[in-house]
Length: 103
Image 1 (cartoon, helix red, strand yellow):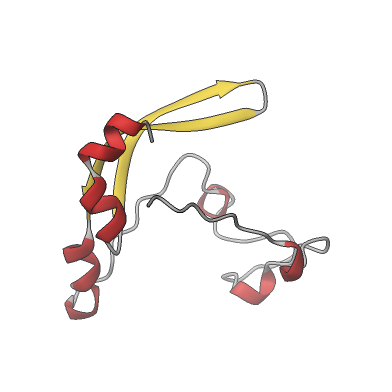
Image 2 (spheres, rainbow, N blue to C red; image 1 turned 135 degrees about the vertical axis):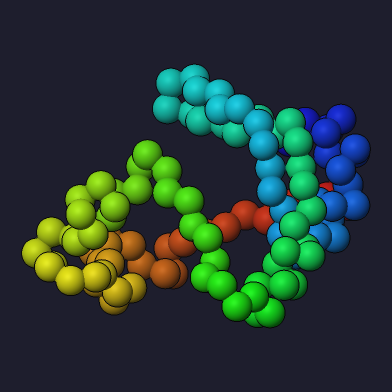
């Protein structure tokens, strides 16, 4: 998020419960950036999720392997559950998320 875009959308970025961003992808070798051009506050949509009677619409992208493989994981003929996803070298104590202080 460039400083000019951040300043124009400061209230939404700092105060919203959920935001949507639109922009373009920049790739330079192994480095990939999403350069944000537009930010939308989705707090009202987030607040209304529990009040909806219909199913939450999900769009599927080109990289959705679950849908591309016919809805099954290797070695599993049914619908996968979260416990079916196993990454042997991933340990929760090694995951570090750096935070940013925008003040």
